[in-house]
Length: 199
Image (cartoon, rainbow, N blue to C red; front, side, top):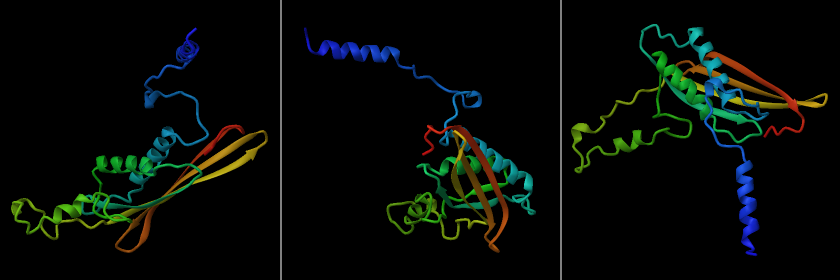
């Protein structure tokens, strides 16, 4: 008997028993809740922060113009490796659509978010480029506001279960005077089996 037949047969049986891959509608996802953070947690936290910010009046510019916002540091103080842009991007999109705030990609804590802001300006005085299309000096917009924050995780033992608490903390600073004009904390609390992994 060919020694590969049992291997192929086992692989075929495992594939037949595996759960089929399928699409999930984020708006109607009733799947199991994980102890770790998933996209539903980021959606919930971002929506809560956005609605609170818009209703607070902090981004209502008396002049009627849109505020220019820079994104500062969003610290991940959890046991998980997460990209904080998953939270911030949803807030940025909501603010842009509100018509009240636009985000600059030319300024960031670690340099420009979009390096092309600087690269495009290096074309000045280059004989290879039509200078009429090159960005002029003094055209970048300085930010009025800065968004910063932290995501915190706390784990607790509750009888024979574990409780995992996530706190999404955000501050909006007026860069003219350094004052926080809006602050928000959205808690997301989960309780489940102490065998569940929370990192």
